[in-house]
Image (cartoon, rainbow, N blue to C red; front, side, top):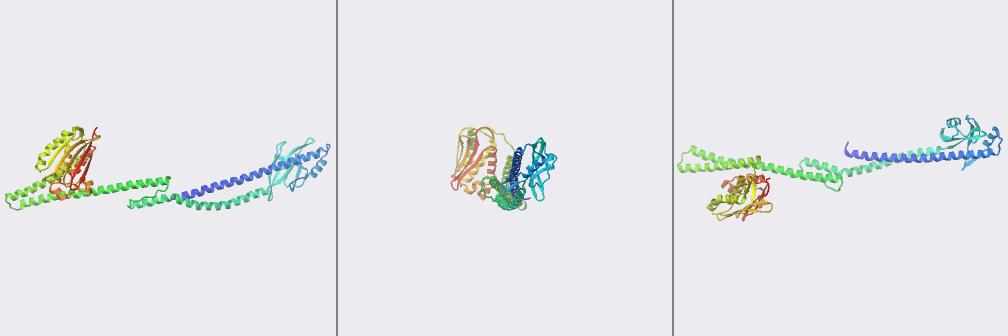
Length: 468
């Protein structure tokens, strides 16, 4: 059964049961109140008859049974517009006399009464219902019973009419409650319908689905939780899609990078194999084969670096960063000066936990990228800067710079801002990807700031203190 019908039926059933039980209790309580009032009136009339009979008998101390019969027959008491009927019987239930008519037999009630106690019974005679009472009285050491009755047919008829009227009223109330419950259930479950609809659309691929949050109740919080889940799911799906696209780009770029040098190598090798050439032509062709082979070697080495960095842990050791950076600067200075580049190194003292060989790879890659970006009058600065919680290795150049839209992708494998220039200089777009992996292993971060046409700043942040 659907939740809507469960809620609808529950509301109708609970309301109907509550109203029915309340109505029954109310009618029954009203009936018993009236019935108790009739019993009290019955006893009052019986007491009044006994008192009147005793007064009449007191005037004739020496009486006989015939005189008792005459007194009883002549006794008449009026209650409102009704004359109270009475009957006097002996202990065996035989009538001695009476005034008016009592339709019930006396013997049953008198035989059921405890000795010297009064009582009443309910008698149904035909279509009428009576309350019948009897109480003992002593007359000259002999026990007689004084009986009277009250008709209570109207009380029972009224109860039946109330039950009937309440039944029809409950039909109307149930119909009204059903209509109201239908509306309330629809309003309460509307957020669930919206959630269900949004879930189906998300299953169909529309990940931007959200539901409105109108209240701060349980439904509202459920809607808010759904929206938060949908937001995270959309972000993760887009991230997975982007990762899959990057992986596809990686494979395509790798295939392209391998294909280009292989084509050159095969082509020049075929020329050497199939043609007769003078020594100079053979040297030129062999040089092409050598350079393309070196390019493939560098490509395979950097790919291996990426794979190794994914699978291995490295022990870090405290290293004086000033000496470390000055040593790297000293190794590259001849190359820089030979290319007409102004090169400077400035490093502050601090011992940082690093893996020196890997961090040297990072610095050499960043400096090599800077060298390729500047012209003959270029300026490159390698710096080590101490901050409160970090040690920053900064490489600054005044080269061509990187477009702002490209900065977010330069650490992706095989991504190259200027592909033709990068390939001409032997690049494959893997250097910065390797740098990022190494910095991540150190628990640090790598950032780039660049203005196209003015230069680039690469910043490697290494955390001071214990090893990560």
